[in-house]
Image 1 (cartoon, rainbow, N blue to C red):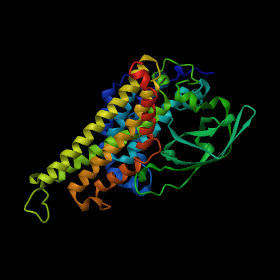
Image 2: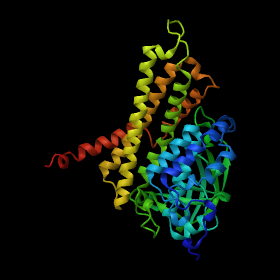
Image 3: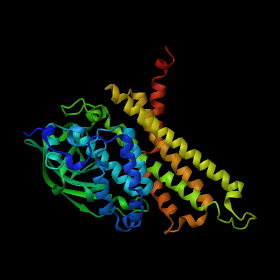
Image 4: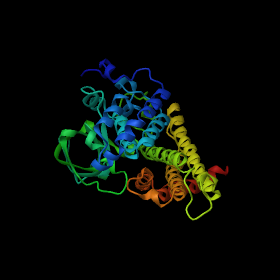
Length: 399
């Protein structure tokens, strides 16, 4: 078998790029992304020009190990990149977030799987779906897989898909299948995040080699099948990273909403009042201040989530159960804070914010939709965190 380390990845232009440079690349793409944002919403998928630009910048491979042609960067950098892209457009940030993570975790599968994916195409992109499909029958050498996997964000631009199947004993498994194994059924007709192309992929009697499967509980515990245990991502529990990355787009949405407000609101007259300019209205001043504070708190919190994940990975250890529960809890809180921020800003900007043509309206719809993802639901996170706090109470107080 050809060794991955011998493969030429020079075409990706990814070597010796700093984390700051990666974020700067994302920032530089914002004008292009905004130019195509309306088309993404209309066409129900991010424009090819934008996908190609993100790929050319190497941003889908931010966390892919360097030995595979990626950057091997931190989770913090991934969040910063995604947030900047989402400052251009929420759907673009969302597609990048899920593709970035699914592609990175392909490097934690067996070496043969990594060779299958990155050997022929170092720029391969993978979409990820976490809900189990309809059928996975154990056969000699692997599984016969059929089913429908909805919410396949970015599947229109993926060469592979990461899907969840049921293994023997009812254990969920993560499996990787090539694009030729599935078709895409249009099903994503929604109010927000319309450009993510989160349609349903359909698989019929595809043979899945056993070596392209990992047990999900093992992935949660960072017990991956890759022999390259020195990779940074090999120390990152999948559940924490998969949840945390989903609120990075909302940071970008929140920043864009505040940016638009500061640009357009100050000189706007306040109807039915004596204020000729909103910047002189205490009501508007207070709403914008409250909004900016919510955004700042969300930014601090996502940085804390990233620090928890990156800090443990740097030591090669798994965060303890309480830390993992706190990450899950804080993920939901970030979503809440951004939704609250945008609500304040919409109130300040007035009913016109909800016009179809108003970018603020799209930001609001995108944020409200993204916050309903099952991995983000705040109350589930609070439940998990509260349980850990109470179960560990004796240890915490030193008894």
